[in-house]
Image (cartoon, rainbow, N blue to C red; front, side, top):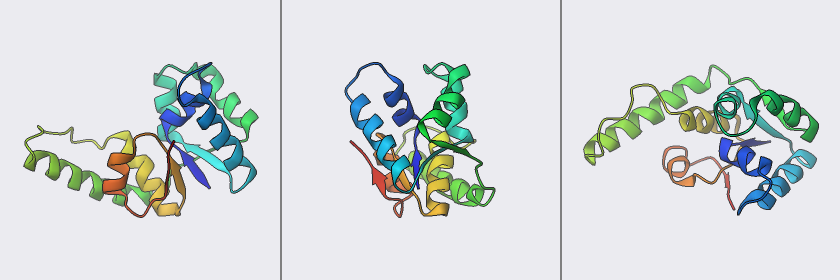
Length: 138
């Protein structure tokens, strides 16, 4: 299974753009092979973002992308990774990070817990805090 980060879904829904063809091809290939999915965190980001939210769930179903629940077992992975991020940010004098984990940490923890690939363009944070996750990037 390939878990899709929000930026990949947005790229695939654009009428053009640098990553549009790559994102569409990746999603189509993932659906044909082991499957492709988004979780509730990605869905929430899509509803809040530039993709027309009222169509996103139907678009996912039509392209064969599953919308799946975020397992509660991912919470511990997410929280521990985010605590490391906050500590590193304080140490580097990058300022205080919000106390609530960023969406990427929920997505990364989900992929790590399930042993899934993660398709994203934002690889730095995932690589650092979820090193066992196989990242698919353009």
